[in-house]
Length: 543
Image (cartoon, rainbow, N blue to C red):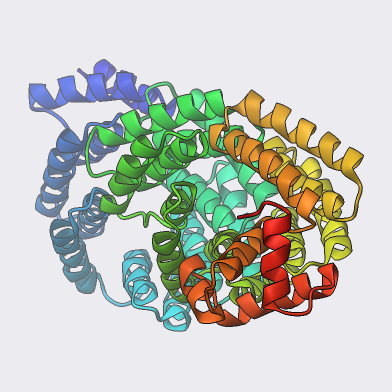
């Protein structure tokens, strides 16, 4: 049995988690397992996705340490059992175990490493309550404890938590420094496997929130390799698959993105209650939407929402694609008011520009584009610059500033090319085609549309292909009349005898926007009044 125990501990040291679990389970069944090996059994069970066995082993290890008078070790077992239950969504039970860890730690006195670990959930509660400054103070205290007692696990976790607080405080540069420092401990192998996985996933998640694509890509590749080197590892592989799906989507390999998203959903669904399942559902819903699979997208956005990941802005963009403009506008207006965090807000603002330009509220779309430009200047990330330039170009196009639109859209096109994002670049090409056509450059417009069509067909973006066909047909008729698509809608309603207020209600735009469209048409076409506009509409067979 002594030799067998040595074999089990060696498997644990080598990160052969399946073998470690099998050997330690056999020792446990023999009835001769030591408390520290029960702790190893709990960790091996957790890392191989055996949550019930993990819970049982950690609870028994906690009691065994107590019976042996090892209060500190008993407190740590209670703490990690509480963390596991929290991550599984069992907050009441998790809080109970962390509370027990706190009571035991109080027996040890105020100056012990275990006190530092307990500062983390207290700080996260403050952060969740919207108190980032207070939470950061607790995380800094935890870091001081880690330094004083040389606790690498606590040090890495405290820095990760501090980065979350700094992001909530809109201090991205300090947040990135904290994330990089947390990763140093991971790369050097200073921290335990469970904490390594937590930090990897947490750092990638925060990089995504900051739209720091370079760091997110880099750490996702490292996390993938780390998971692959431990074939038995379960808890972190699902979230890794979500990030891999996002990266595949960005580079235009939507088939690979779909496969990774499906694998992520499957892996994160069993056992149930894994916190990252909402991310997996949302990513899968996004791919359904982009491919025109609207029923599947709606169902999967619902799953994401029920799993705790809000369905917007994706669901609002789905409503736009479905032609439900009122629903899309109502949703995005609410989400813009509520969106927190720089990265999350940037994505919402970009969607707001797309939706409100379609519904005709140019004023709010301009405000959203300006805020997006401000965020890009603050964060200085290539992804944000690309999003901002694209939004600026779209708004300038709606403002009848075709030359300004071309300038902004060329910047967006260069940025997306640098990021190797073909689909997003194709969307910019469609806008460029519209701008070039307004400037009388029909050849360039056709070239841009042809290039966009090829990319849309390659990735499987069926809604974009359909919209391109619609724009091409509409563009021929509108160009002959000298009007934009929206102006055609307005002049038809003028010819039908509607007032500006009635036109605004019909098109779900502001009365001010209607007046601007009319002024632009009257000036460009040399029309004196509404009667002349009506005659022009009939002359060009617009009604």
